[in-house]
Image (cartoon, rainbow, N blue to C red; front, side, top):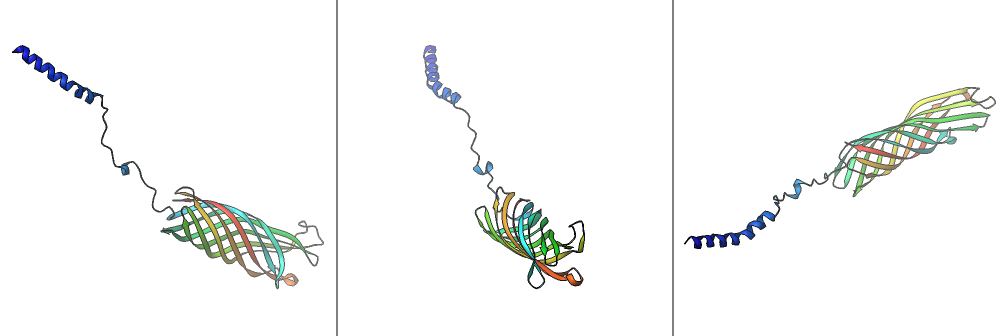
Length: 232
């Protein structure tokens, strides 16, 4: 009887050994977690919020003198800061933007008389509405609004050394006008974007100088500029 029992136990052990060994050899695999626990999709909107940035570029334009004559062609660079707020709804982005740039857009030229003149745009600012359409991460936009600038103009006696002779008249005043432009802005990341734009600025005419040299002048300016923005 004992022999029979020992034989039965041995056979049972041999029968279960492969299954037990297979269980020992199989590595433990925890239950798989949903993919959403490991992956967070990009935000639905990357253009809604406040932003600040830096920008700079090059401008050309002219000062109008008297009854349509040229006071002088001007050209030069500018650099400054910008910021604003935009809101995205589907592929449409709209908002407000402002900027302030330090500039050296100037000239120095001879006039009849003999007279020498110099003119310079020293700074320019804008406050504008902005609206555009998204093509994936690229925003094409238009903008329009207020513009202002600090303009300095000087008039010299051409028979004297310049500037050692000093100006006969010098005028520096802030002028108001309007701005309108077009641009492209690309979202490099959800927070950083790069842009390039064209901006037309018109500053209204004002009287300058005195006496026989009294005249008035306004300014038309075209700016090409690039920039980087950081969105919060």
